[in-house]
Amino acid sequence: MKLEEINIRDPFILPYNGVYYLYGTRAHNCWSQPDDLSTLGFDVYESIDLENWCASKEIFRYFDGFWGDQDFWAPEVHLYQGKCYLFATFIGKNHYRGTMVLVSDSPTGPFLPHSDGALTPKNWMCLDGTFYLDQSGQAWLVFCHEWKQITDGTICRGKLP
Image (cartoon, rainbow, N blue to C red):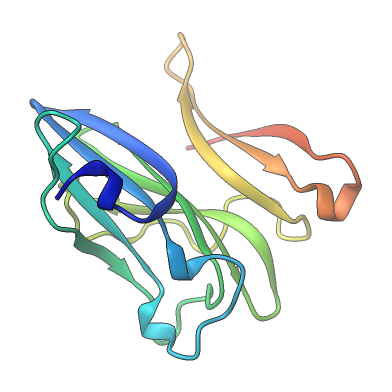
């Protein structure tokens, strides 16, 4: 399939071993709660030229008991210490929007929960978390404290173990 045929938001590309992996927010994951929670999830597309892409492959799907049950947004996959870590924004009933981390041995998944819920502060509305590794080797979560809660959103950070 051609790039223009892919319908996602929040695109993120991971180049790895001569292949490009494209992740993003599924179009129907945005701004509304679907009637069928099993449609919530993330996919990956693969390419060697950034123009021609293989059909999507599901890498994570909502499951009973998963805390996020509304928005699955902005997945990013980062390689760190031999694993693939997916950082994404979720929101659920009785939970604020926040960034959670999933993990896999491969860029094509499957991804499983790595953190116990969101890593962002539990009483903050947060989104768009990303991974940053500083020169000293310290891993960080960089995220946005959402404007909906504080009027003017801010960029925040927190150390990762």
